[in-house]
Image (tube, rainbow, N blue to C red):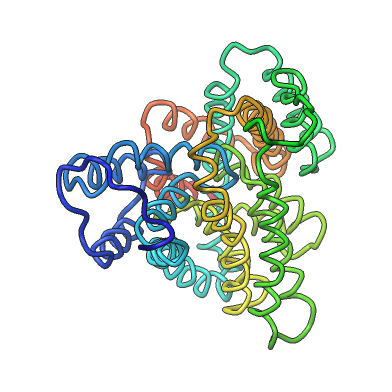
Length: 402
């Protein structure tokens, strides 16, 4: 029996061959527009309700894991489905076919973008797209804060403090995510220390993020053993770290990426970074595929491959290593408290990054007009971000230079 296969659970039909799951996720990665919530909804409709390939309990366990461990929710659920079907190799296979379509699409766009980014028509396109992306990110921050913080003044205080720090300093400090999580653990569920360690069953969660980074470091050395120079190594190590700090939403990575690729390493300009985020939003699959675009701009095809693999390694390990353990301990009060604090911090960081980025993007009445219209569009229509980006591109062509 495979290491990931769960005990038999009530299903309306026998589980199909694993290749059927691979075909499904390849298709989902191709047409799965609308963001993580919509993509997870497609999976629940197709795999649980229609085809009955999974039980509701199996599926919801994957959703709960994805909402707790760092990473983009849709990709985590895809990995979880592969994991319970065929273990760690199954998780790898389902993730690979799900990510492949968006990776290919982003590579094609990046290949066209690099030699043409200075052309007036390309500048006009992203003149309109950038303010729209600001509206999308701003609404994502508010939604994430409302979903996580609810009416808890402590969580709202964390969101506000992290938002102000990010907006004022222009930097996203990853350790603040961890600090916010640990603060909520101390406030809501302080650990009790017993003689004999963790035998009472109330153990703290395994250090999955640290273990993911450590294990991923070895994998990265194998992957880039033939690469020359330090750029690919720096790129890979940076995206390994980034993959371990995606709390609450794929867009939580935006402030972290901006700090690294724009402010610290100077790999991209502010405008190029916003263009990369926009490409991630209009492509199917997880928004963190932005890593492929950034990697291509930094190091060509090799850079795209290294960045993409690196950012998904911690996410993958965060599913296959603690997955079974998490299902048994998902109601642990310390786990829940840490996730609430870290996600509240992520919402604040997204909001603060929006302020920082908007200063350089919204610089005249035309970009302000596009941003306001985009904000109204996002508030009125759900899961229509790719359409909004295309409309904003049209507005940029019409208004740029006018």
